[in-house]
Length: 257
Ligand code: SAM
Image (cartoon, rainbow, N blue to C red; front, side, top):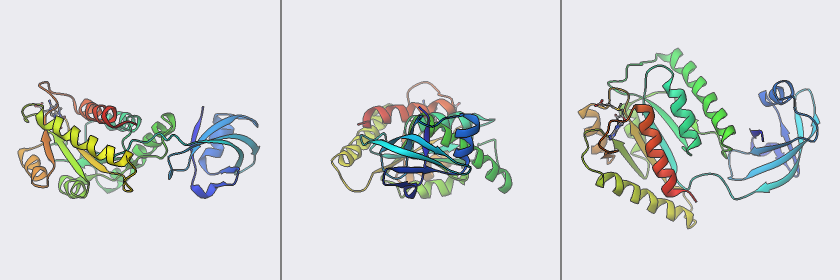
């Protein structure tokens, strides 16, 4: 079933009004008709609104609300993936898989060894493209909101952002043994359980993944000084596009409701 995102104000009573690019997509690409069912999220609550197309207009489509699924789809922790900028279009794959695995935000990071360095205009254009990837993956996986993709940041800026989260880790291939990773996962589980018990604030956690060339020692030290824990992901070297997925899969498995 096709999934769309609307703003909360587009849901009034038992009517949902779809506007913007989705109108053309529904009419001209999907060629959907009166009576067909779609699922909708409002980007704010964790509900899925199931609706039926009732009127197809020039610039808007009016749907009749059928029912609301309140069991939610979001993880009890808001994960931010701080991804060292990879070569070629790997970032698109990384974003797509991270969104399916429940990430809440992706921050591209221009680390010292990141081969790709984007200037202003290019960074804006790339980020627009990555945001579309995030939206498409969010629709496909029926997320309650479209995970944010920020403009690229320096490692210093990313570490500062992570310093405001409840907990963060930096997988580092020179870290030894799995104890630190297991401790990190246990702490995230503890945060998730507090959230499941109805603690008001949704806990936040960050994961730093280096580019193909990895992190410099200085970058790992800078992160560690901010309380971001260096952890090992095992005795093999994972590709940059594998490492984030591996961590998010573990955290999704351990925190999913
Ligand atoms: N510099 C590394 C090397 O020796 O070839 C390659 C870096 S790896 C391709 C990219 C990133 O994935 C690393 O910076 C790290 O964040 C993560 N990573 C890969 N394998 C890892 C492992 N076994 N333990 C911890 N992190 C790992």
